[in-house]
Length: 339
Image (cartoon, rainbow, N blue to C red):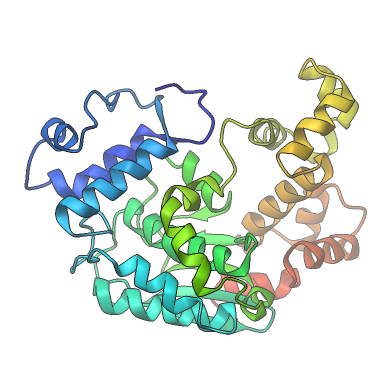
């Protein structure tokens, strides 16, 4: 186990995965030993485990307890449920129809995770209907979104960027992996639990076929986990550095390469290997910050424009539409509950 291992999961999430089974059952040590996974460094929050090991844990717990959802719902997600979900979703013509089938099936199986797909002009959201329910723990919500969002991305053959993830529960002590997996714009203690993304994703065709399901399942759930950016990657390192600076102070690619003790060509080559360019990283952080500030009604469009380093509001509007497929006003309406 190492904090620098590529494609890893924090042990904080491993502890969360075990909690539903140890709450009123065997202790953690016995549970892990029965799964053939003793001696995990669960007491050190800085440790990480390979994603393959986390996948083995997920599959082992599911097989041992006949529940693919870590015993976190009112009803277990029986073995074979994810298999059925993948097969049935590939028969749908669009991502929207597939998502409707996915959330309806999970609502039927789990009992207390009833999702609804909503289109609002250029934005879309999947909302959990939780009237009167006590909020779930964060790990339960994120596991649900991992299944729904991960399967949607696989069906579309591309990553569907999330503009925001809102949850009714309080913010947990550890959120770094969640930010990497889903969005830097995580909002807790909100009136509803939902994910928000560009509505154009709903119109994407389902590109996967029934014949591709066995190959996908053979690598699941690790393939859902590793499709996300690795928190130890160069891209993530650059993101963390830029988030600490005012956009006006962001370094050029040459200066950034120098600070990382590498040549500009090496920086470009390594970023290309991770599927991104420096400009795309900067745009992603601007989008992340813009969506966060738009959720605060006390921050004006002029303030956001200045904070992000744009020359004027029209330039900000143009960039935001390019990033998200919608305009800042519509996004603010939806996120504040007025849309």
